[in-house]
Every structure is written in C-alpha cells, then in structure tokens.
Image (cartoon, rainbow, N blue to C red; front, side, top):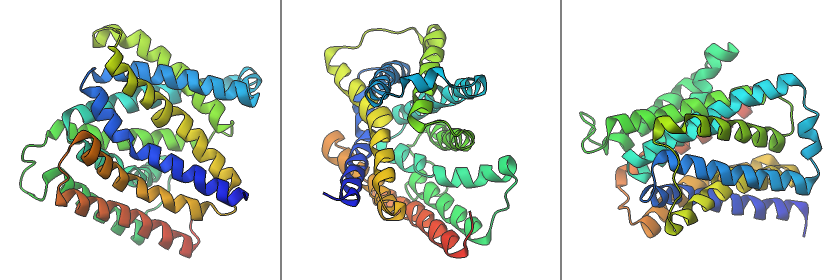
Length: 297
C-alpha cells in the first residue's frame, strides 16, 4: 500500500468520524448538560492525547517546551476546548443539529474576516464575494428561508453557533504562530482547558457522574471529535504527496453530518439547510481555488 493510499484511507476515516460528531452531540445532550458534556469529552480527549504522545515517544517534548509555549498553551486552552466547545455545545442544545452544524461550518470566513484586524491583511474582491455568499447561506439556514424572521429557531442559539466560528478562528490564528508539534500543542491546550473546566464547574452546577447510557456518547465525542481524529488527519497530511487531493475530501463531512442526523437522530432535514450549506461550502471552495490561482497566501 502506497503512502498516498494510506493518506486517502486515513482522510476518509477522519471525514466519516467528523461527520458523526453532530449526531453524537445531539445524543449526548439528550442525557447531560452542555457543561457535563464538555467536562467528560475533554477529559477523555486529554487521556487519549496523552496515550498517543506516550506511544509516539513525544512526552519528553512537553517538558522541554519554553515558558513562552506554556503561556500560549494556557491561552489556547482557554479558547479551545473551554470557550469554544462550551459555546458550541450550548448552541447544539438550543438548535436543531443541522442548523448548528451548518452555521459552525462557516469558520473559514470568520478566519478571513479576523485576519483583517489581527494580521493587517486586506480583503480581496473574491473574499468579499465569498463572505457575502456564505453569509446569505447562513441566513437561509437560520431562517429556514423565511427571511423576515427566525421562525421557531432560537436567535440566541444562532448567535452562539456563529460565535463558535469566531472562537475557532481566533484559536486557529494564534495556534498557527506557534511551531510546537501540533499534537503536543493540542494536548497541552486540553490539559489547561480541563483545568479551567474543573475550576469553573461550581458556576455551572458542578460535575456529576453520567449514567451508563450517557457515558457512551461522551467517550465517543472525546475520542473521535476532539482527539484521535485530529491525529489521523495530521498523519494523512504527512503521508500525502498532495494536500489538495485529500483536503478536498473534508467538504464531504457536513453533508455526511446531515445524513447521520437524519438516520441516527431522526431529524427531518430541510431543503433550505441543503441550499444554505451548498452556498457556504461552494463559497469556501470558490475562495480557495481563486486564491490559489492568484498565488495569494
């Protein structure tokens, strides 16, 4: 088996696992609060990342990190997993899975917008058009095509879902500046994030043991949304001779999410969700292809 074939199989596995995340969130939230979901999934992910680093022989790299990297990890851990997943899980608790997932998928445009004040970059015409189309797609999804109102959809839930894209974009921009091994960096971030979660737990009603039924989706989310899947994706990127060839497969993930939400959770998928998601994903692909043709960073 060639490295490219291995990369393809790893990518498909990661995409399928990410595609199940929205369904797992909705199932877990039927049994526990967003904060309990945050604690146990972050705990499982931290343990999984520790085991991966132990297997890879990289735990020693953690101890060798300079104080600057530890300080950044403390900040990144506050953003993700603490703030990002708390906001995201609350959005999923208040919205249909298809709406929360689709709105959260617009994070590349949040990244583009935040690059203007944070990195002093200028928006190109292509980026402005793409952001406009993506925003329209988000409005279609959030209003279910009824543009004068949000209908039965929670406005606060929509705000939370959009806020999660901003948090992820800030996390991405700050994380990109640090050259530490990605898995080491993610592990440290989760260690700090777990610390914040425990310290702040009294504010959110404390931490209780989940029922055996609830434990299954909690463990699943910790392993396959937060932990192992990220490592699979990184390994695929390292093995592939062309990141573009495997990177494009990621765009399958949100549509798989809709399929799983319908088959597993039983959500009726609205036509407007498909239309809005096509607009968001299409504008992302349009922006990336035009940017690469123009030779822009």
